[in-house]
Length: 200
Image 1: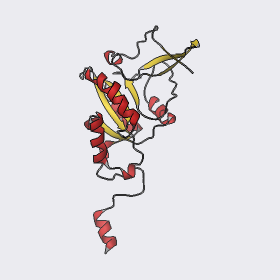
Image 2: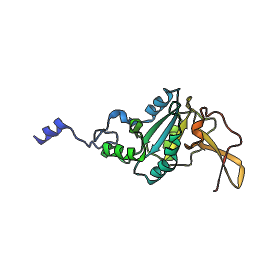
Image 3: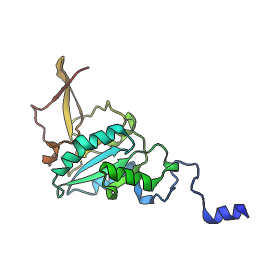
Image 4: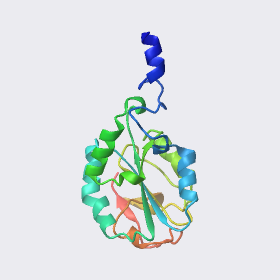
């Protein structure tokens, strides 16, 4: 009788990472293929892909200090924002609580998705490979928060980097969201004078 009751009502934990539990709508999961389709189907807007979690102190700081102030000045006719919420365990997810806490941080939960991959360097490299860039990108960052900016033609916004003590050796990394970049519409145009110096 107990077995019959379980079969009739279903279980909330299946033991698989892709299980839909705690009432997570299936359309709220996002993988690489879905992300590519979402971005490449839109050639009218620039896109900001924001990988984050409301339980990450760095994410809350980034939202408060940089992301939300930049978004206050964004032209919403030109930009779309998508939030890829990174969770540690997709099969024990309390979706409603996660969305509530994400909203409190500043996430538009209508455009928030549960990210199926992790947040390691190789995971971001897989995302980068979906889109075009005017230069090969070097990704030295893992973890969250992480923002990837795309123009209408899905070119990645990048920035030139160099070491303070070796200024003639450059590399390119994805550019972060800021008040300046939201004014641009075409990320294939490069300012040859613009670069960032970093220490080793």
